[in-house]
Length: 190
Ligand SMILES: *[C@@H]1O[C@H](CO)[C@@H](O)[C@H](O)[C@H]1NC(C)=O
Image (cartoon, rainbow, N blue to C red; front, side):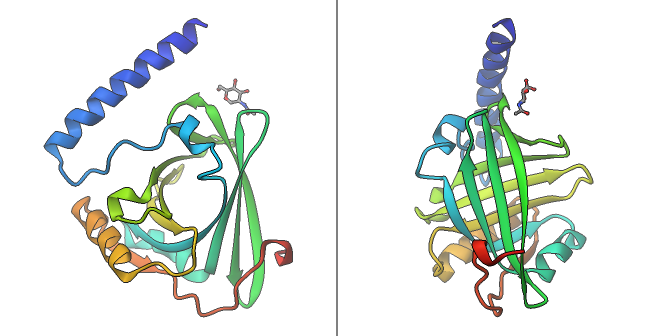
């Protein structure tokens, strides 16, 4: 109970801090989606990976080996999200599943091995109502911002806007999924 009160006070302070930061750094995106917004039907389900921006070009390696990546986000009963990533790699379909704890510190998602944290934004700040943007930070300090879309056709203006917004935040290394391999369906993935 006390912990809950403390966390929510901390959350409000973070909100204020973020608001102040946005005034000073205009290209910062709006506040991320709260957990209660995120776990609605609007955001659960499948998303197509569109593009990624990183600070350190080395962090693009993993993205370049896979193609046609998709995310499948599902809510579980125990305050967790099950996130399955499916992708084509060397002409094979593969998948990886992670669990994220939603009850640690709103709006942060903590991967269950506590080795990665994610934040999610809606696509409004890149003018894409059908998109989400995920910031992912892992234990090796690999930081990436990924653009996902519900549909398969993301307008070029959206991708360019995402790229330039990220450049403004010094995430200058950018990679767009080529989608040259056959689409990888979740149930076909090994
Ligand atoms: C989520 O994190 C909270 C707070 O650290 C912890 O009490 C809870 O057991 C975790 N839930 C899961 C399913 O790991």
